[in-house]
Amino acid sequence: MTAIVETRALHKRYGRRPALTDCTLSVPAGSVVGLVGPNGAGKSTLLQLACGLLTPTSGTVEVFGAPPGQLARVGFVAQDTPLYPTFTVSDHLRMGARLNPRWDAALAERRVRQAGLDPAQKAGRLSGGQRAQLALALAVAKRPELLLLDEPVAALDPLARRAFLQGLMEFVAESEPQPTVVLSSHLLSDLERICDHLVVLADSRVRAEGGIDDLLATHFRLTTARRDADTLPAGMRVLHAEHTGRQSTFTVRAAAPVDDPSWVMEPLGLEDLVLHYMSDPSESAPADPRPVPEPQR
Amino acid sequence: MTWLTWRQHRAQFLTAAALLALAAAYLLVDGLRLRHEIHGLPTDCGIDRCFDLEQVITGRRNAYLAAGALVLLAPALIGAFWGAPLIARELETGTHRTVWNQSVPRGRWLAAKLLLTTAAAVLTTGLLSLLVTWYAAPFDRFDHDRFQPLLFDLRGLVPLGYAAFAVALGACTGLFLRRTLAAMAVTLAVFTAVQVLVPLAVRPHLQQPVHELVALGKGPTRHGSFAGFDTPGGRLGPDSRMIAVLDVPDGWVLSGHTPQPARDATGRVLTLASLPCPSSGPLPPDGSCVARADLYVAVDYQPADRYWTFQLAETGLYAALAAALAALTSWGLRRRLG
Image (cartoon, rainbow over all chains, first blue to last red; front, side, top):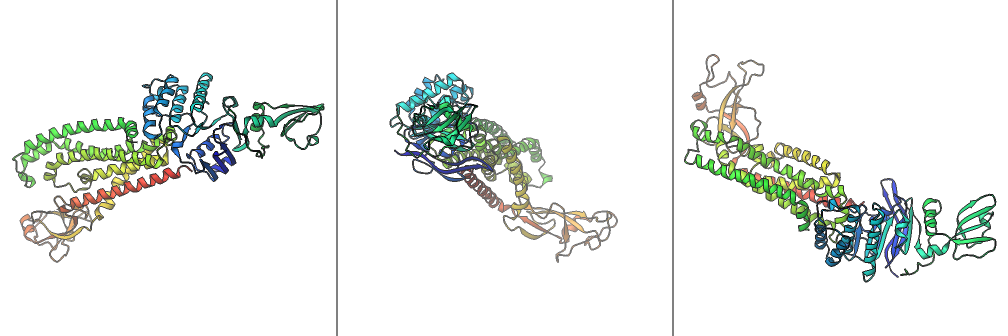
């Protein structure tokens, strides 16, 4: 398995403010990675470092095993989907055709038609959802091997959101070989249906990363009669503890569930898992020593 | 990239083309009519003997000034309206994140946009300058002043250099300020400052000026004439220096616009007391006596035959400035990613 994006000890500061701190992660080929975290967590910074719009303060970022800059192989949908307001929809496609050697005009036109866009319409008069669809068409018709999307649905209403993500998944499903996709959102619900990998960012740091199935299989909620965290078995890493008068609830990370009549151990839902890592910045998950499994599809 | 640049800026380009066409139509028709009217009139003459010609010229003075203003304003406006938004508007609206992620590297994107816009600017200004140079030719033959600081800027080659410089200046300012409006204002201010500074501080030294003692009231090409006496204390006295003004037709007198002291053949400054043509009372000295008296005035000037050398040199200077700014922009564009 090859890593399409690989960062090592990546730091980015804007003046004194850290935007990304000590970020080490790898995006496996063919995966759909969700980048989730609150606003200002460093999601945009990470994506812009990966597409070469920003350069690191320190550390390295490699895309296809080289510094970013292989423009033809990477598609990028920037935050707020910036387009030229005076250009029509078909002007944008024409721009794409002129500036990209691997341009797939048929795909671009199909995507625009499916999204119900009028080719003669000026981009400045499109709705947010239509703009996002046009930006997506522009990015995918490059036939990129890596597609980066920065909060593509943040400003969209639920219907437009669904239509956009559907369009994205169609592109992923019909492309051969399957492209690698990284998209960010501050809402897990945007990501969980389409991603097989998750990176949780908070406060400029990576809090957790891994395959979603893998994350789900290793995080549990453990409810017992009141007891101290250090009396739990050694294989469990306590991420969070909560005590009432008679009962203790632990959020733990463990390789597998442990059956014990004295407690109830149930899988932690993805939402709780992500919320935990997002809201508890003091506890950062250690890098998972096990290899990330091949994405299942 | 050519198509993209055209598509992005076609409104500006078409506006400029329309204005240029209007100006061209007017200047061509009026210029032909002017030539028809002065056809056959004596042209090589002093002011006194060319009354008919002067009348025609004076009647066209406003059109001539307006044409000059066009050439004066064109590069500044091009810098502000074409150059400044070139990068600033992309940064302001965020579209740079879209266009820089197409398969064209950023350096090539900049090179294409800058070169095409500069070419359009040079072409527009060049055509305008050609038209105005042609239109103003009868005026220049009559006035003999095309080497003078402001008029020099409005003829021949130099407007092309100004236009290239203005575009590069606007692009560079836009990159570093990231705001279109601010970039436009700063471009206009800096461009104006450079346009004022160059004729004052740089142009006179493009070539070593000629220093010469010029005989007053003699010679066909230089007009020197006795101007009077300076009165330092507010009163005319025996120590008042005799002063004269000198005009080098089609050339550029550098030694100030103030009259210069008149000297005799040995270089001695003459005063009222040492005047060779003494007059009784407050009357000025007899003109014919002064003409015979072998008087001189010292002058630094750029002779008329250096006009095209200066045009070339200054165009080159501005082209070099434009190239330097383009290099700075390209460097800043790479560094901006930090």
